[in-house]
Each structure stands twice: as C-alpha cells, then as structure tokens.
Length: 125
Image 1 (tube, rainbow, N blue to C red):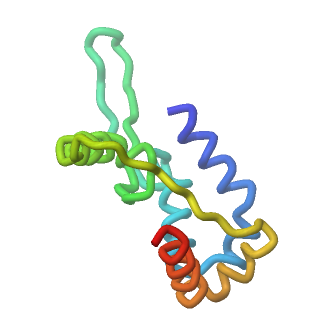
Image 2 (image 1 turned 180 degrees about the vertical axis):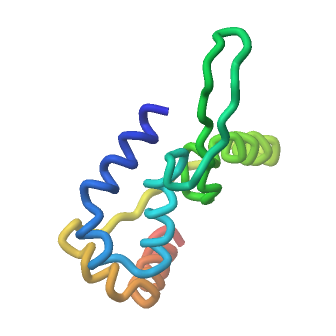
C-alpha cells in the first residue's frame, strides 16, 4: 500500500506537467491511479463490532495499470505464463535507445518503435 501512495504522490506532484504533455488516454489512466482508494472515488462506511469503530473503505479505480487494483490479476497472469514455459535455455535481450531520444520517440511512436523492432530483429537474426 505504501508504494501505491508514493506513486499517487508522484503523479500529484507532477500533475501540471502531465496534463500538458500527455495524451488523453495517459491523463485518464494517471488520474485514475492518483485517485485510487481515496475519497475522490467514493467509498463504503462500515461498523466493526470488535473495535466499536466506523471504518471507511474507499473504492478502487480498477484501472489495468494500477498496482493496487491489478496485483492479484498480475500474479495470476504470471503464474499461468510460467506454466506455459518450455523447459529450455532462453535469453532475455533488451534493446534501448539513448535517453536523449525519448521526446522524439514519444512524438513519433509508431514509426520509431517499428524501426527499433526492425533493427532489433535484424541484429538477432
């Protein structure tokens, strides 16, 4: 839970930058994550007989990118993928681009990612 609050705090602290530099899908996703399990999404009040106290459980955003909401589904997905693994040697290879190219790639995602994957395949092949 602490990690989720830290992520929400980071998003909140950068919100003015986010709304000017992200597309509408990214803004909706980040907005959902920052509001997840807070009063902004509403909640449910219940009474605990054991401690004689009212408690509030806030609603979750249910966004697939949210670490709070998708942890269980993620673990189930990983488990089912592990069952499908072929028992053989394999290699995990990562191709990256220089940090200085990040803004260019964000602006021209489709053609530049296509070029990156083409180059990566040609390198491996």
